[in-house]
Image (tube, rainbow, N blue to C red):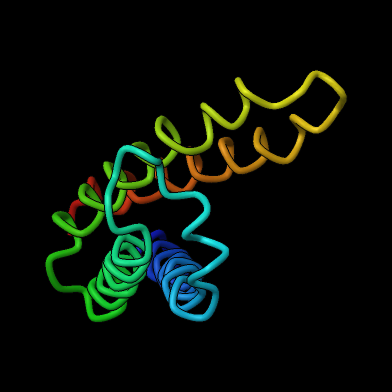
Length: 124
């Protein structure tokens, strides 16, 4: 299997994962609304907007249109989530072992941002 095929398969799998997270924003609005930083007004609106953005990025990757822009914007979005949601959750978690879950989310979204940048940086 050549590198181009491997890259296409990886991009499709990544798009499916990102699309799933986007759909999950619409299915679980109340759960995600609790994670919207308090300095942002209109919590539910942000959940819908980010869900739509995730789905849009997934579609861009699947149809191979505007993948560079989609990858860069997705990475920026995910890193903003890391800095405004996950990092404060890690810092503010009690020191009783409950930090594990916020750290996992922080690392997961950092890895997803890295993958988005890899897709954005891919030369055709």
